[in-house]
Image 1 (tube, protein in one colour):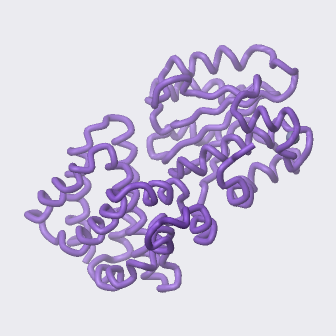
Image 2 (image 1 turned 90 degrees about the vertical axis):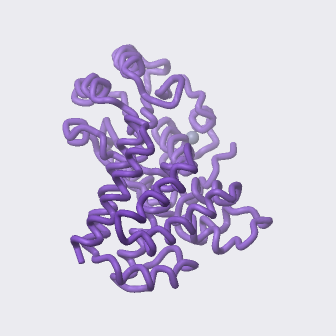
Length: 323
Ligand SMILES: [Zn+2]
């Protein structure tokens, strides 16, 4: 049974939290896993399901329950959205209706709510009551790329686990040998298997990283915003990934200010040394928050151009104000 990056995911602190809760007999009914790493997330969904269904702990990954969980076909594993790329109110209605009936085997039932960042307020409000009164044998696992659009009332009812970056060696091992500049590609991935896969397969991703650093160094006043906004707009459906690169670069600039050894994208160290002088830590933290907020807006409203324009204005404004 092939689960990609299974060893790295099972070694991750995020998986460790759930695993320790099971081992300690203090399993919560609701968890929110926050990760933008789509590739690792797929494995995390399968491996946590196996952990919950298997009679053994840690899960054996060999029994019938494990094999069904890993293939996504366990009869007591329910995954939403049932179709499409967003969670709609009908998905929550289906979950609420199903969770109140008896399980197939009489054992644990697992409900996976994927892409939770796409839930609108109505869907989140519908989910609230079920989060409060989850039946004893049911576990709801919510997965979100970011939690900026989640209602505080939802967040307060779930145990939130943030998936951190994976080790450079794990990412490097996941990249095929044929990749040119394999070590640089692994650094660019910032600990994300999803980004590593994308960087390996697409030139656009490698260009985006260059554009991020060019923009951070050269975009110093309002007239410089428009040309960059147009360049970013050309990436169309890859704009969330561009914002991911931008967030990673800001995080690295903060890391650098705390000590050069913490920088993840070491191939960009010369750019970082030049750019960091122009931003205070406070400015970088504000920009990171704004990027997170922008990603949330992209998920909900989808008007990429206005989100990007507003973000770029904010970057220039904050850069000047925090000087
Ligand atoms: Zn098993």
